[in-house]
Length: 152
Image (cartoon, rainbow, N blue to C red; front, side, top):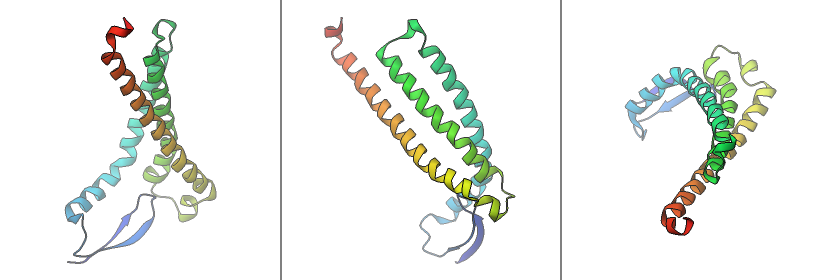
């Protein structure tokens, strides 16, 4: 069974996609992808706004004088890294998933191409920082539990 559909890709491009009998993901996952694409922009925008607000609250609480500790400094860094990733994703999500009625000239304008390039790098760096801060936090907690008698 060969299906030819006109679908919207991740960057909002309209491409002719040919799906043959050997499509490894099957019709079910393609249908899930197609139905989720229409809500992704709004869902990600909501999550990013909520996450930014809660990370600001985390930063406010964790940077108080009485909350100073090595663990809280790591958690503050994690909140900052995650918040920057979410703030940076908001315009990308709005442009590529919510504003679907753009012309090709608007969609592929040079400023958006530059922003997409910056977005690719900032998101990778932000996620990498978050991942390594989480690893550091796990090691820190392991050491605190493992050598609890030495710290007392």
